[in-house]
Image 1 (cartoon, one colour):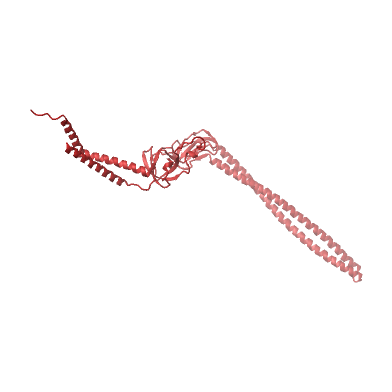
Image 2 (spheres, rainbow, N blue to C red):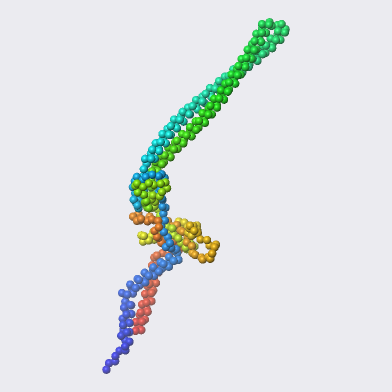
Length: 407
């Protein structure tokens, strides 16, 4: 009569079969590869935790240029569409230029009139200058005549005094004495006439100079009016040129709110231009800034593209975001609760972004900044992962063999 095997024997045989299957290369090699992969990604995360700082509170920023008219008027044409890419100096909108063209013609006509008036006044001023020169020449001649008459009168006076002496000595006749006396009186009369003439000519010089000053003042006023007219022409030309709204830079049209036929006022925002140049503003916690500084390398993952791009830290804001908000916190009053502050950090891309994708301000990104210069190379982490996975596989195999030997 044969003995029945103990009830536990089938279980032990089933356990041994499972252990044998686990010891098979068809299980060990794939399991080792999976463990190596897990170890590799674990080492990557560990390396990033010690050498990098990241945040999901980060967004794309760009210069947004608002387009507003400098003159008021009715819009004739808007040759651009929403989200259209435009180049610098492309026409964005056209305001009716008719009124401003008429104003320009009026200012040009006024400028021509002022130009003619200034020419007339300037000619009068130059004529007065010549009159002053003529009067000064006449005054010099009259002064010279007066000096000559004074010399003649002095000589006649001397001759008369000698005649008086000679008459007392009976050396000259009474007729000669009378002739000397008459010559003296005539010379004195000529001197008086020459002096009066010189004084009259001098007064004419003063009068001419006064007229010249008045003409100069009138010419200065005419010149000012001419300059004002020229300035008015330039201003009218500028107003006419402002009827064409041109793109200040390359970029995409956004928030277009104008259509042909609309009446627009000065300063009314019609659209915005977003240039292609963008950067990242990442709001890191203040505790993450211990080793962060400008120039450090970074990788930026754009959520909309699910791609990463090389970048670097450009600058760190001198102050927290809350301090420059509309209502900054007042910590000197009430109960104080410490809150970890965030500081905006500007990160600039080092490589061009895809030109076929629209990347504008406000898109979410996740930047990773390498704040520690030491970085474990990836091949080293691959080698360590393989070594650890191999050691784990070898240890697992030894355990299996020991259990199989026992069973």
